[in-house]
Length: 83
Image 1 (cartoon, one colour):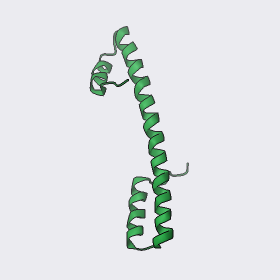
Image 2 (image 1 turned 60 degrees about the horizontal axis):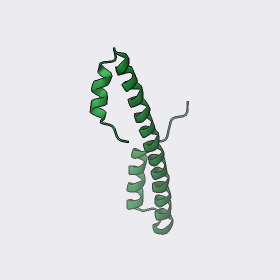
Image 3 (image 1 turned 90 degrees about the vertical axis):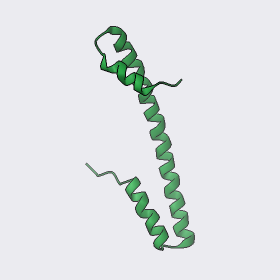
Image 4 (image 1 turned 180 degrees about the horizontal axis):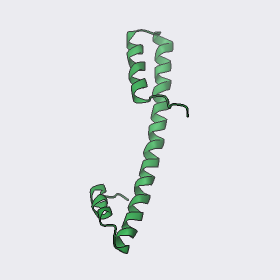
């Protein structure tokens, strides 16, 4: 199933009728599921990238290229601050 996010946003602006509330809830459920799936995919991709970088460093050693890639990874995936 796919949804038109622009149409969903327009429908959500009219949140006064019961029909709109039903549409809003269905749209919210769909987009939350999509977010969860994309987050899981992104988390897996992050782990694969970190593993690949680790392999590169192991085989090529630390040099300007691996340092640049590591810096790029750090900017894409900053460490979460501890609360």
